[in-house]
Length: 286
Image (cartoon, rainbow, N blue to C red; front, side, top):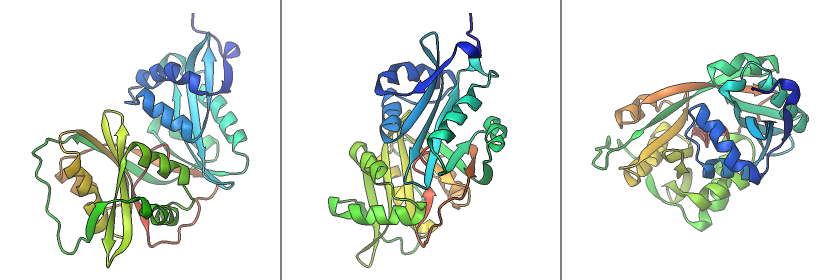
């Protein structure tokens, strides 16, 4: 028998919940691995709804400072939808974040719920992905695309500064973890690093992001680096809807498979520029 809402316990997520959380994401068709859940929880905090010892809903968030956080992996088991679990977990999430402004990327189904909590639309993120054949021929660079190379340890302060300029908050913990499990490339002009991209294991293969640059051309060069390096694998990148990269990615063999709506509750931190995010770290992390 499916438990009633009254018999559902809401509690904090811990590392011991990783095995129980995996079936939840599988039930809604998300390609998360146990490792992806582990990274997400390790970088932030989460709350779960549990019924008869089984995890039936989740919500995670990632505070970047006292003013701003992102949230995601907000899932309700299909068998338990329509019981107010999403609203229940959002109440806990917002209470835990106090007065922080919060950013999320919502499916069409979730927008009404988030709007009821004061979130408003501010943009879109488009998901491009495919198995990229090992013999893929990529569109050659045009003009002066700068020099792209693998990142070095001494690039870390510059990468963190560029990311903060583009995102509006410092993400030292996230960038450090992504570099631990993945690899980074930077683009140089006149011996100065002007942008970076990270590629890491995720889901069905590899995920590229964040991609931070000063121009669409530089963003393409950084992405091209990983398309070449990871050819023969499943590749995913989630791009800002205003990035100007969609048609180019499709031409490289990574079609647009869907979009989500970026929403914010409160005010998104100002970004001084000229650095901007072309590819997000993930739909959850922003």
